[in-house]
Amino acid sequence: MPTMIFVNGGLKMDGNTVRGSSGVWSIAASQDGQWIVSGDSRKTATIWNATMLDKVFNVQCSDSVYAIDISSDCTKFAAADWADVRIFGIASGTQLLRALSRHYVVGVKFSPDGS
Image (tube, rainbow, N blue to C red):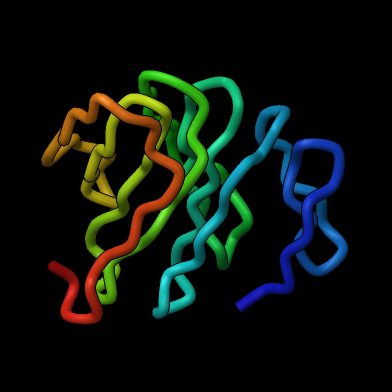
């Protein structure tokens, strides 16, 4: 797993800066070391290939993405913004679930069994 730090809105990994977008608010790495997901102030969750340090795709959310988590089986990720929580397939970006909230959402976490 690469070492990650934030640099001017991008991700810096082992000396390489991976440019994403500005205002990265959240980040998660998969347990298998294959994926990194970042959430930003531009209503975007970005999926990165952690081995190649390449951007795979972006998914749009309703507002700034304040929290990200990846399931323990590394097949799904959750993105939380002010309005709702969305769950996506990590390899495809397909939205699997959208849970609406009437309150601010500032955190999200999968249970240890991935549900």
